Length: 488
Picture: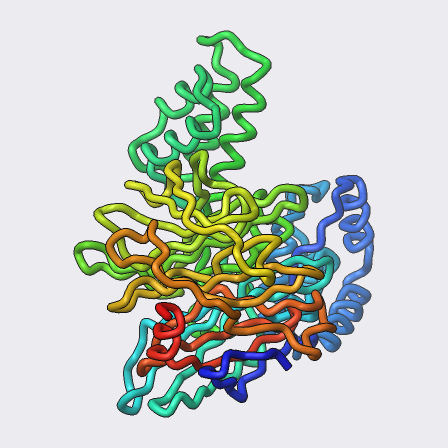
C-alpha cells in the first residue's frame, strides 16, 4: 500500500470501479446511408415481428435501466429525420428503431479515481461534529473516455467516514436544450479566439444582450445567406468556430427524484468528446457572501486538451464553461475559494513543469501569470503541479501538490503560501505526504497517487486520493502537525 506521512492515518474507505454500472448512450453510425438502411429494415417488419423483437430487447435490458422506453424514444428522435415518410410509425416501431441506435456503456469499468471533495450544500439532520460531503470522481470506461461522477457521504466527529451507496440505476445528466448566453461575454470570447471580423460583428449585432442557442443559429443563417455583404472564404470557418463555442458552453441538470451519486456527466461538447478529466471542486465565497461551487477540469477532444470551468449552486443545475485568455493552457488549474485583493486567483502550470499563480477580474478570462515554484526535490524533478484548490488557514494557504520523479512516479506533497500575497511560498514539505507503494506498482497507470482536492474538518485535513489511476481511498492528516512540518 501507499506510504503516508507519519502524522497521517489511512481510512478504511476504498472505492473501486464497478463494471456493472451502465448507462444507455446514442449509437448512431456516421454513414447516413447505413442509418437509412437500419430504419428501413425495421419499417419493413410486420407488426407481429416488431412486437416479438421488441419484447426480446425489453426482456434482456428492462431491469438494467430505468425508463428504458423513454431513452429508446429519445434515441429514435435523433434519427427520425431519416424516415422516408412524414408519417410517424407506431410506438412499438419507434421503440425498436430507438433500440437499434442505442448502446450500453460501462462508464467506470476501468477506473474510478482522481477525487476532489467539498462540503455538501445540505448539512441538515447531522449529529454534532459531523459533516456531509460530496466527492467527485473521474470514471473511465471503454475507449478511455472519462466522465464525471459523484459520491455523497458523511464524516463524523471522530473522523469515521461513511460513503452512501449509489442507487441501482445510473443516469446521464440531462442536457438543457436551447441554453442562454450573455452577449458581452460570448462576444469577448470570440475576440479572444481571434475571430474579430466582419462576419462575427454582423452575427452579434442581430442578437439581444441575452440570447438563446436557437437565436444564435438563426443569426448565423441570416448572415451567411445575406445579400447585403460580400461573402468571404473565412465566413464558413468563423461560423463553425462560433457554433463550437456555443456548444462548448452548455448546461446540464440532474433528473428530478434522483440522488447525486446516480449522476453521470458524460462528455457532451466538441471540446470534451473524449473526456471530462480531473475536476477540482471548490466552494467559492464571493465578496457579498454568495456561495458557488466551481470546478476546473480538463476537456479532451482526442487531440487537444483545454482547461474549462464547471459552475453550480446546488449540483442540480450545472453549467460547463470555456475559459479564455493567453494563460489558459495545459492541465491542472485550481481556483482559490475566495478573491485575493479583489481578484479571482488560480494555481496553474502553463509550462508543464512549474507552478504559477494567476489573477483575473473576470473568472472567464485569464492573462496574468506569476511563477511561484519550481521542482526542487528528487521526487519532483520531472514536474510539479497542484492537487486541488488552495485551502485557507490562519497560517496561510495550503496547496496540495504532486511531484513527478524517476520512473514517472507521482507523489502527493504540500506547500504553504502567504495569506495576503500567495505569490510567496512560505513553507514546503521536504518529504511527500503520500508515496506510491508496492500495491501501486500495478494498476491502470502504475506508480501513481493523485488527488484533485481536500478539505479541513475538525482540525484535520481530509484527503481523498487515487491509487494507480484505478481506485480511491481517503487519508486523515492532522492539521497542526502538517502546518508545523510546512513551516519547519
